[in-house]
Length: 423
Ligand code: IMP
View (tube, rainbow, N blue to C red):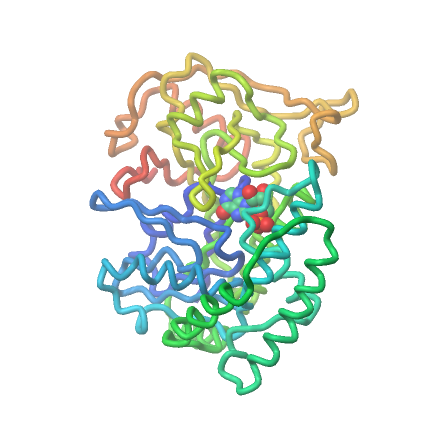
């Protein structure tokens, strides 16, 4: 039985949480495979809006098992807060949420290191969410990290102390003023680890292997987006994990041949939060309108998101890298009201027109080439079927399908579960 993937194809915030929530009824298991509490997956249903950071988006469906995979990094303090926020829903989390022993832990000093590193960069800062993601993945690949399974060992507190001491020396190496009270942070951390330990730890690759053998349907839920991938994104303005399809194999232990459908999610326009190049970024009223109508503020940090037209060069690249088999277009409703919509189909690069993403997409190297297409005025948010779509929206969708050579199977016209139209 194949494992399906659900991935963001832009710079994150495409609406993965909503779509996982919508698709969960078709799956037995939802598994997160990378990233950590830098993610913010927003779900809306029955008038409730809920943001998840580390916990998979299948958690509100009683019948679904939720796996936090080995590729995820967990901050016990934020995890505890997420659990506290879920208390109002009366869910049996010991039964429906399991955590890989191989997932790495974000320590309080990882967060401090993130802050020190960003502060030291000045103008070149990444715009990190400052959740300790980069330093934790650095310790993972540097073979110094502490994993969830370590907390079951007798000597784990000594391991913790050795690593935290090393981090403190590293923090003092940066010539920046970071104020902190480690004793207080550690008290909070160890308290949160106790709560984490009340949940079920598993050998997740074995669990998922057996689940596949038993014919269980598994959906791997990505965090962030392809353009934030550590290898294929707009480096160094990226996150520290593989957000693309291959990340699901390493982040869950799923064999490449067992990947089935690859669902790729994109917004009908583009947003980016944090620093880094963004060829189709708008600095005018159109960009301001997208941000306002689309409520484009970070779910984790509350920062306003940068907005711009849809960039098909970047999107085509993401479709290729991931082997996307089905597309889902989010926030179509936000584009209602524009007389004309622009779609970037190529870049002007060193005097030439190119249709692929070059090594360097900084503004001084490239400028977007746009195709203009008529907009629509109708409010899409009340529509529940493609039959109600205005002609201009159908033309927009057809144009994208032709350019991307992959069908758009879902069009989302609002944040609620019910505002999801299948094609
Ligand atoms: P970090 O992963 O927190 O270090 O952040 C690195 C970059 O990825 C920054 O530009 C962040 O704004 C961006 N980023 C990280 N997580 C998300 C996300 O879930 N949505 C959008 N951007 C993100």
